[in-house]
Image (cartoon, rainbow, N blue to C red; front, side, top):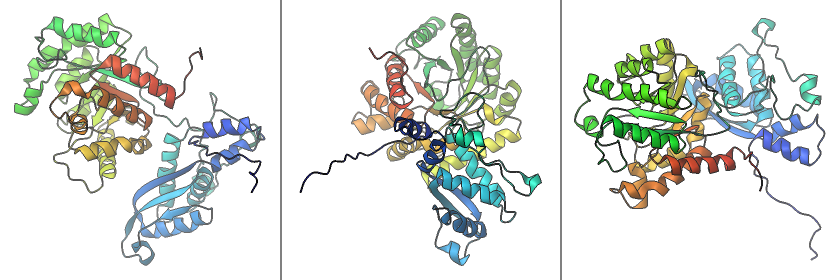
Length: 447
């Protein structure tokens, strides 16, 4: 049988921009590209505990548009008042379904449309949101003639299409570049066990400053200064004033010595954070997620600086790992906003190595992108963690975890991390730069 004179290959294109570039290469009509590219990007969106009646209504609407809604068997019999569902569809299907839900006034359908659309706006660059118009009885604004025929590709400044990447409150003198590069946060512990890589360097002010100088020279965008030792975490909290005396002078010195570098204070104690911000810290890295010290909410609200909320829990029992972590963040963010913290201040850390088994750490890293639906920057902190040692067969040897950290950092960035928190800044900075070139695009010379 003669070989057919055709060629076929798989296309692995997961963004509107990438698919639109391919269509441009094929010289597709400019007006058709926005319409067809939206049909080529499919998503799965989980929504928990919606009214069962709403689930049955939505299923009919999305089926009519070529998508589907995953529901439990109990939904058809109305045996439970609320159910978890999964939206399945391409952007055209989802957008059309959202448009129809906005026209309804029963079973919280407009509210459900809102939360589904929020996920699309936060995670899909180029998505054209449906504009609900309650004052006009649910009439929605569809694509304008310019959108459909003008070929608005790629996105440009002033476009009303979604940017699809996280935002964060401004820091004076710094412009956040999420979606373009991964921020490297270098760890500096102002404690006897953390001032040097081997823990043998006496932690006086000079030793800590040498560590900061090295972290900056190796390419850190953010210096994360902490004053609580591992011994203190195991045997009791470091004295409050002692911790303040350790970190505040270092924060002030770093701001003066390296004005181009961002400074983070690593603490769960509100008074330490407040003193450090007063000394010039740009960010608060709170491993307690504003729960261990509730006064941290007041400090974050009063100072207005970005704050990292880390997931952690006692024990490793989860009903569903990623959903439980996401629910933790929903609750923590709601409590923060209720206390006056702006949502735009918040960074999320899934807590690699905290309250998780090896398998849970690995699964959460693989599924990290599922947390990007919050629209908040994601911090990934696997550096030298015990999980890496156990996978590699060196559970008690930190020195053997470098390459494992690099692999975990790479996967974290590929799966949506915006900030990596690491000890080995030079190696991990190079790792991040290479991963960014692969994942986010390379703008340097070809030769």
